[in-house]
Amino acid sequence: MTDDAFDKDGRKPLTKLAQAGRKPEWTGMPGQPGGIVSPPVWRASTILYDDVAHLRQAAGRSTHERLFYGRKGTPTAWSLADALTEMEPGAEGTMLFPSGVAAIACTLMAVLKPGDRLLMVDSAYDPTRNFCEQMLNNYGIETIYYDPLIVDFAVYLEDGPIRAIFLESPGSLTFEVQDIPAITAWAKANGVVTLLDNTWATPLYFPALSHGIDISILACTKYIVGHSDVMMGSVTATADWFAKIRQTAYLFGQMTSPDDAWLASRGLRTLGVRLKQHQDSALAIAHWLKDQPDVARVLHPALPDCPGHDQWRRDFSGSTGLFSFILKGGDEQARAALIDGLAHFGIGYSWGGFESLALPVDPARYRSATRWQAEGPAIRLHIGLEDPADLIADLDAGLARFRVLRDTICDGA
Ligand SMILES: *Cc1c(COP(=O)(O)O)cnc(C)c1O
Image (cartoon, rainbow, N blue to C red; front, side, top):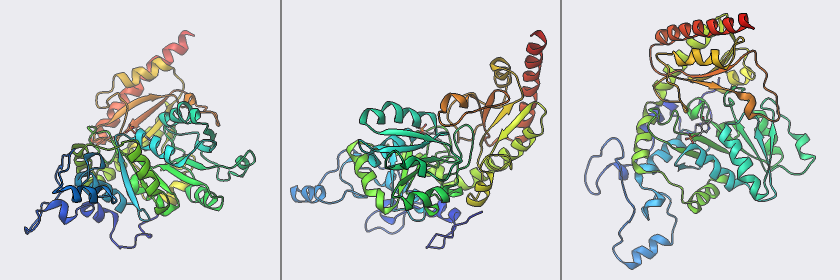
């Protein structure tokens, strides 16, 4: 388990969550004592200047954390961006995006150019793959998928240089944990930039830049917002990359609304207590599922049989609420019977809110470098903040519904 060993200012991450991003000029009135706790919602498109000279002066200098025009943000978004930067020791800055996918897309466009080759983890979030195949492909950028468990990429250099390695750890749907320190060491030695989708762990449980990652991407939609009511993405990068990503975001006109930034900041303050509860409840449910005779496997990084579990133990300081399990036998219909009758789990995309969710997932559809084989259909759970005893009882009844259908179908065959 790691802690904030790389943090120069000595504050623990939970203290930072409470304090980060609160500059006096964003929370008080000029010339007046006192200040409000949280930066309020600063809504703006036009910024008015005193005269032409001031207008020209504003246009001629960096707009970073300076009022210039609404698209460059206001203190509400800067406060959130600063807070996310403070959570990532080694970071130069953070840019915010209207969704996690927008953050991934813009970062790939910032890093890659025609003729480049990108190594993409085979367990990546499905829309990330889509962007590579349907957009990067058009610009002459080749995507090569790799097994999430490998650490040596030398074989890929035989066909030409590699520009970037994209990681997602644990992997979407299947939760393999990558050996990030080994991969980033290889990448640095070979002049390759590393990008990580860090949505599952957040910087609280995995400060990515301290582990050698150059660019860390979050779907803030999930745990940062935490209440299933805002779409947002963020990109936090080292000094080598931040300016380039910021410039690319400006060129694409990417921004977030002040109201959404304010909600995300509000979510961020309670990230510590929420994740702790998500972690505890998800672990209780994962262990219970593991002991059920109708469950073939539980895919959770904190369970010893999860591929990459040793890496998780070594590098992460916690686990969160999202994991999958594989049923023993059964088909689509039997899986649907389990999910459809659940009383406390919603059926829907996304995750990271306070509510539990159950989703049928079919990992084999989103793989090309590795083969996904399983003993039956898979279900991804997001464990929310409900009482885990209620959730276990709900899943227990669901497994009974599954069993009836599975065994009836088998008998009839
Ligand atoms: C949801 C998700 C995204 C995309 O975020 P959106 O805000 O929905 O666009 C990216 N990566 C992972 C791992 C996700 O779960």
